[in-house]
Image 1 (cartoon, helix red, strand yellow):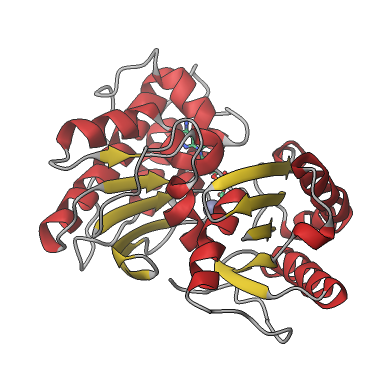
Image 2 (tube, protein in one colour):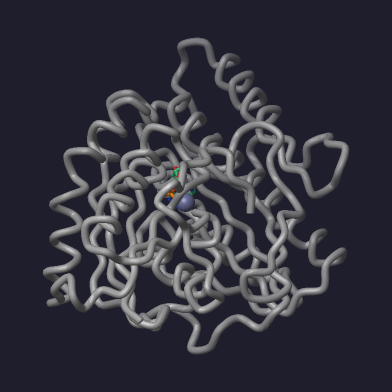
Length: 333
Ligand code: KG4
Ligand code: ZN
């Protein structure tokens, strides 16, 4: 089965063709990051407008890279949520129009399921086998900080989440505070290599009612207070970045390991933009009692290949969407 998948939930316009949920025939991502950089974050109105401009050429390119005509496509998959409402509407409207015009079945995919099943694609850097179930997934990006317990394929439950900012959002906000530009995660990771992670004792573990809840607002305020104390003097940016990054990683790893104590799991998956962070990968691998798997970075950031991989599971289970499909910006997994 060949699925044309479309993803527009945030600031990447993406299309891909995936065969049998495993084989990536083509994969195109038009990132808007450079355009949002001057606003220091994602500007939703601009994101929606740029999806409108990019979606047709990106989809054409995905079909042409796959060397396929419309006849060879069996279904169209699209992310219906969670995400930015205006951005989601562009992808869903376009996918519905394609499904109608080309008489193809439509498959609705939850964006987080995409992150969960990207690891099933047979591409370099992915594990040679599917993750054994049950497994635990930590999905960390600019929009998400979720711990998901996957008991079986398409049988998963959210067990932990953030009560304020997403982990990537915290990286982006602190990077802005330190004058490091957007997106902040890679910039912080780079400069943190020259810093001392113990220079500032930032609070790693927030006071929350449930140990599986994440919170980054206290940490962000602590960095702000530290910055304010330098009042015009040169900031020790590398030390601040390294101490902040260490606190974020400590929180992410500690809570994932706590989830592992509560829920039986045979592996840990980390995905989302923040999973590109080397300290997070190495600390998780060092401390977890089960194998830690992360897809290659290009599959961890938003893309349509992962949506095609998840869509195939829905198709096999006979779960198709109707042309009444609506976006759900707050969709839960
Ligand atoms: O998954 P993604 O590309 O887009 C969504 O937010 O959905 O994730 C982007 C986020 C940004 O907040 C960015 O700062 C963060 O991932 N990020 C990182 C790293 N690379 C990207 N955070 C920490 N360390 C990194 N190396
Ligand atoms: Zn994502």
